[in-house]
Length: 116
Figure (cartoon, rainbow, N blue to C red):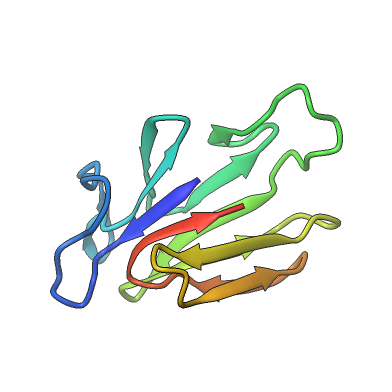
């Protein structure tokens, strides 16, 4: 999964935003998973076994809703809404890496970010 948010110049690096809208204006974040792009909706975009973006429907160890991506006041946030699995994310250059334990959330850095 690769969230893409605008960089410091206001342009987005990586995939082109899908062009949805949010209360703050046009959607600025897209999720790319297995070659498909998903725009983050105003209510957020959930990822998991039974979510907006289905990661692995046959994996009973994966949470039904594992991750939630939201936009709040111009910032993009990654929420680990699961109860057991830790997730990691890193910017494209590898300068920033963080891990999110279950229940944690973190801001997604500008540009392309990889989550695993």
